[in-house]
Amino acid sequence: MTNDHQVIGIDLGGSAIKLGRFLPDGTCLQSLTVPTPQPATPTAVLLAMVEAIAQVDPQRQAVAIGVGTPGPADAAGRIAKVAINLPDWYNVPLADWLEAKTGLPTVVANDANCAGVGEAWLGVGRKFKHFILLTIGTGVGGAIILDGKLFSGHRGAAGELGLITFNPDGLPCKSGNQGSLEQYVSVTAIRRRTGKEPAELGALAEAGDPAALQFWSEYGKDLGAGLASLVYVLSPEAVAIGGGACACAEFFFPATWAEIERRVEPCSREGLQLVCAELGNQAGIVGAAKLALTKVVGNW
Image (cartoon, rainbow, N blue to C red; front, side):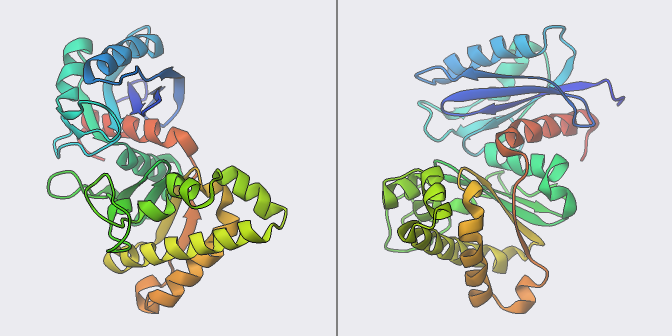
């Protein structure tokens, strides 16, 4: 493969579809964001994607497409099994549909997995062979990178780090779990717990507001308790936090780290780093593009 081979990375969200056209070295040649059709049925989203692909690649220079969707894909990267918060998204053969419309080989993956691959390729994960990413937004997604490669499990659905049980008697979760970690640390949970947005709470904490500082300390403790389970299972070099809450990391990372130290034996956290992700809301399209490159070259 030469460096002029181009790929398209797509990040499908509930309100926006982000696209980027990339070179194999990670250079983004063109990017585009279009609104997600409402209602975001599979047929409507497919048509919006095809139109957007034509805009981001008008000369038809791309040789493959990668798509991140908000839910698990099958292990082969062909089917969006469920897309959280999108109507009628059950076992949608999205790769087949896009290939039929564009003629380009296509791979589908979970959006948080794409973000993890993006961070491993061009972001904070370049420093580590083994790390986990938690994306904190409306929910809490996750990705596991082991030995430099995405771990997606037996059927492709591994890495749902926000859905681990945090409180057995806690609030019900859309996943079917009860008291999952995302019910305590997602942006949705922050709003429910405080009635405020993370940025507002960050500004209050910056100004020294005692209630905001106390909230972030409690939030950090909860996050640390959840991460302790993941550290024990995976023993990563680093835990990366991305998404809407990370701008306030200075206010909750100390409590998060203190809780990890309290709960995790030193031998299981030796050398562990707690870091912020670097690619922001571009991580999804970067990772989707990398997965498309993987499809072209055959390995990563």
